[in-house]
Length: 208
Image (cartoon, rainbow, N blue to C red; front, side, top):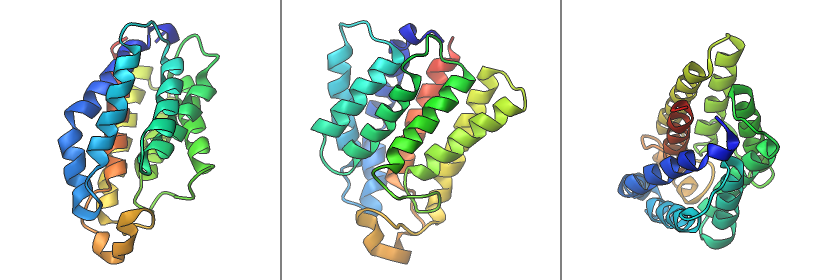
């Protein structure tokens, strides 16, 4: 996809978050404070208003979204997603086109930026459990010689498997970590929202 044509992908991500606001709050309410969907919807809807009448590239949009979430949205969600999106944007800032290798590099950048502010690893019941398997599945598909569209499907499957795996984990970060073993049996809300975002991103990119 041409980087300059990325606004449609950004809008697809925004729509996915808005449509899943109630679901994300429901998931969060089982072991958290129940505001994840509300905060996500607030941040992404603000972003939608700001880009509505502007032409914007995919990476510039991610950078603006990350800055908005980091600076204007409360709770832990803002800084965490702010780091992911700005890290992705920085890694892809010079790309004229987004292909499989480019997207993998952007996901690497997002994961690295996130690692600068949180210590969560795969298995700690956070959005890292979605983000890293999705990136790994994308890279594996590319190594196998799969085309971009097929690699995006593998990325989505990796994200979904990572999200589902959090149900069996005990939380080690955030409000839910206070529950210890009692946090098992429920999806992590951040992992769920990350899966929604990555799935929408993949579907948007695949349309080209």
